[in-house]
Image 1 (cartoon, rainbow, N blue to C red):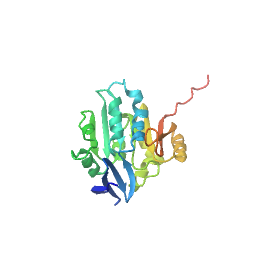
Image 2 (cartoon, rainbow, N blue to C red):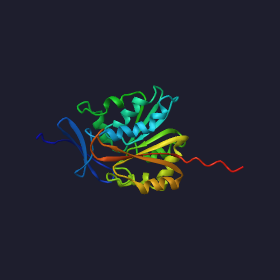
Image 3 (cartoon, rainbow, N blue to C red):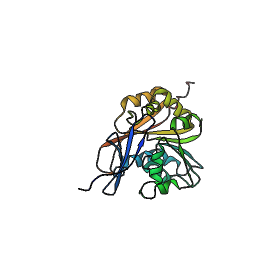
Image 4 (cartoon, rainbow, N blue to C red):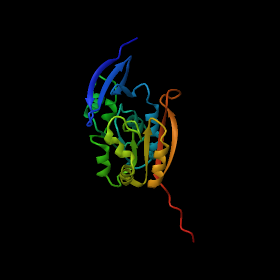
Length: 229
């Protein structure tokens, strides 16, 4: 069996240790020894982009925010769908993750990051949301482990009522927000409804036909019923 090759390490703002490995041609990131993501399992991340961006394929100059770079699978899938005049902001909190993707020695997302439509920011996505009222046609949040974060404790802010409202405030009136979660999140779905969003959830394999099930949640502002005559 080929050994796991540890390539680099990074420390999140709360002290969590992230390690980049290469094994048999694949790359993976472990968080305190637990696998967080792998290039062998990218189907759910791609589906996150497809669910949020499908309606924007023929839009004029759509503006999209992706929270979390990871290995760039969500970004690449979004770029495949979005038109040439789109703008895609990617917010990544950990600078080393950006460096790993840009490193020409690693077969990661360097090509996607050179796309002229991409605006990559070393930033907390919560701050980007706060600074962008009414800006985005779609917001894709693939941050940490979803509604139960394991990497950075502060990521939990995105999944509370205040964080959802901040996300909602950064959307255009007809915009959508898509969330990736490693596990089903029924309580989070209920919270989305309480905040005023209509949401659907689908289970998606990590691989196209196999692997663990992940959850993609797509939410829009609830349509208020017309007043009675």
